[in-house]
Image (cartoon, rainbow, N blue to C red; front, top):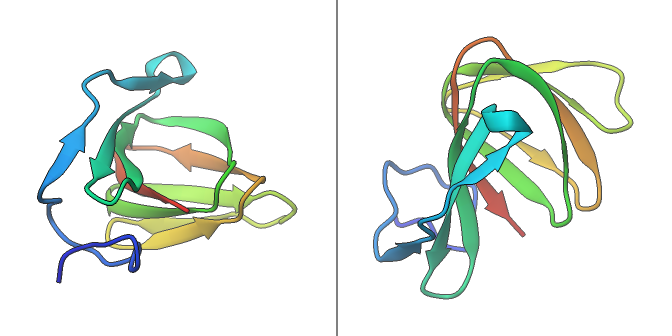
Length: 114
């Protein structure tokens, strides 16, 4: 089943019939690099990697982080405990929030917005 904006948590191996913004999104001095993917209906996702590091991301819109490969620990804003996620898993972050992420190996991800 193709991934659509109606089902942002579906896991698939590729996105068909999309546009890719050529300019890379480079954050935290190159520790996180992604590209924006734009779907025919105008929805956007980012596809990228996070190199080993501890980073804090802020969210505007709600996000679902789908992990393709790698392992990370995540602590959502307002929570005390870190949770571990690995390739094939996902986690959600509310709008207007933040999360801390620790990676000890390359993390390959897709971020679904909205």
